[in-house]
Amino acid sequence: MRFERIPVLLRGTWFGLNRAFRAKLSGVGVTSSQYTILRCIYESSGCEVEQRELAHLIFSNKNNLASALMRLENVGFVFRKNEKNDARRRIVHLTDEGKKVFLKAKTIADSLQSQIKANLGEDDFGKLILYLSKCEQNFISDL
Image: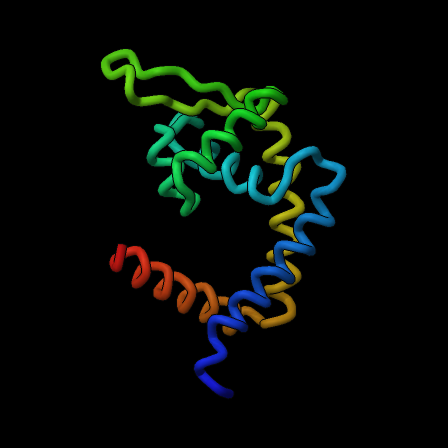
């Protein structure tokens, strides 16, 4: 295997996974990007997170996140409030409807992950997670 192909392999894997996930999400009412946002909010303490922190968690910038959050607000999945002690900080909250949609989409995501795990086997799946996590940490430390 040629190691200079790693970016191409990662990109191809990402596009294939995202395409499969988007197809399965089509009836749920969220996109794969919106799912990632909802997941990060859901997994945060109290189902709320500061907007700048959320941008960091999803590896995005504040402008892209702001437009995505506006769309999620318009459909009633999230709401934003300024922090009481610092009006510059906006806290993003998950609504009950947002939680329902997230959990429905999470079932699909979990199923897709189970398929990958079944194809790779338990040991190789664990290694994949380990190696991807190491790569992610290396890139985060470079920022």
